[in-house]
Image (cartoon, rainbow, N blue to C red; front, top):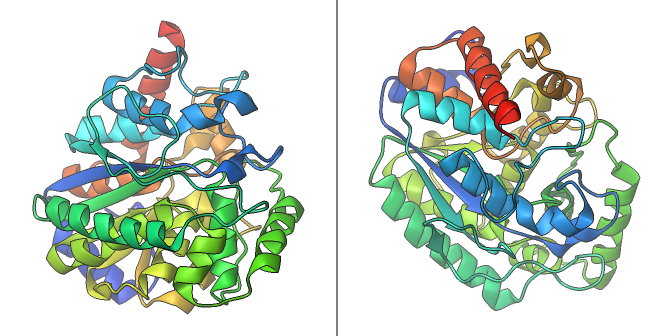
Length: 354
């Protein structure tokens, strides 16, 4: 377990890890969408702009099947940089951690069994409010119902997400709530000026600091839904919010919804912690007294250029990759060397079968 680093509240982090070592885990994967992702240059998700809306369902299908159904290729850049779903699938399957998919506002449905919430996707926040106030309330309520149900099935609920453009809406939510936020990006060159420009356009419509107003004006459907999940799940069991910037936004909004701090940790990759453009740890400290756990999967030592790119700033995190790797280590006792072996093996399978 020594490969897992503990940040922020280290004492809580050690207790959290001890409480779930060798226990049962469940991975819940929330697919969602914001039309903010369609702004040119805002995200690397999807091989081209027309495919962005297919990224969440394709990630869900890949997690389950090892291939995609809504599109005929695995989400990967032309030069071989894969979706982080590849990392997540490799480690969850090895550890026999079950997966369940929840659609909370994706534009396209995955071709597989999933929980449907009927939450609408989010609007482009540079043009109009993200969501209706009633949608924000519904998302929280539905999240509470599903969070409580899933939490009752496991010792630790891991929550991951896929929402292209989500770091931009997360930035808007964090700033809207008065948090000094600098967010990560799926690209090595973080388009910070573009993101800030989009956020400023949203703030010109409304400068309310009331959390529900901030989400309705400048957020996305995933944030209130996962906040709802967190609120009830943490009453029942331990919860790992698997991600970086977007989970910080969930945490910030969840303060207005309520959750049990003693049963919550953020789980992410070392690439997010080391990101000089972002300030995840400072954001979390300013929001809540919870631990942040990180793992370095040592992708710089991979056999494949497409995976080594992660260690150079490409993607960094997504589809709950960091939290999934941490859960797999805690359940099985493997180390980061084994993680890399599993991920390389999955990459080899994917690239030779295409």
